[in-house]
Length: 174
Image 1: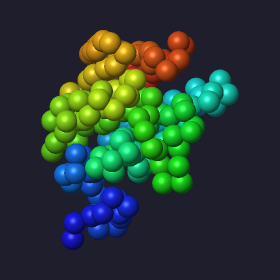
Image 2: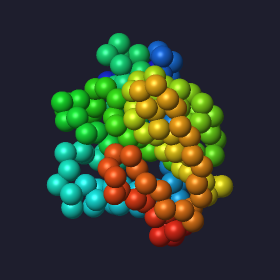
Image 3: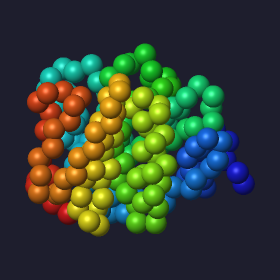
Image 4: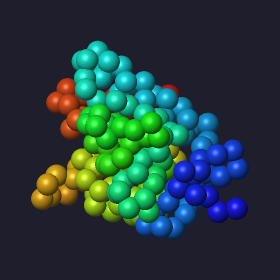
């Protein structure tokens, strides 16, 4: 059964729709979920303490990047600072910050396909966390420039969403 845009994540189907083509999403591993929980808690605690306007959503959370309904993704973490983009079903438009945790079976999906997709959609910041190599790739998509940085699980990384939001990966125990 092929999924429809309104049923991308059900009991039997877990997929993303990119440029009109469906891509299956592998079930997350235990380490994937530990990293997801760590990052979600750090970001949520920071935003709550700052009374920030941004909202943090872990997967499953539907993001319709473009209004054409041909691209619907489910990032591991979505940070949305423009609440006008939020709907009952998820986010309509590009989140400000997306974090993807790489699954062993499809690294090119996050490193190539989604990297270009998120840059084109207007995502400001994109982090790719690689559990096996214990590496983090950070991409900043500024108006006219593209900047990339590489880190490890020993590093403390600053998000551009706020000047004083740092994630210390040395605190992550996996």
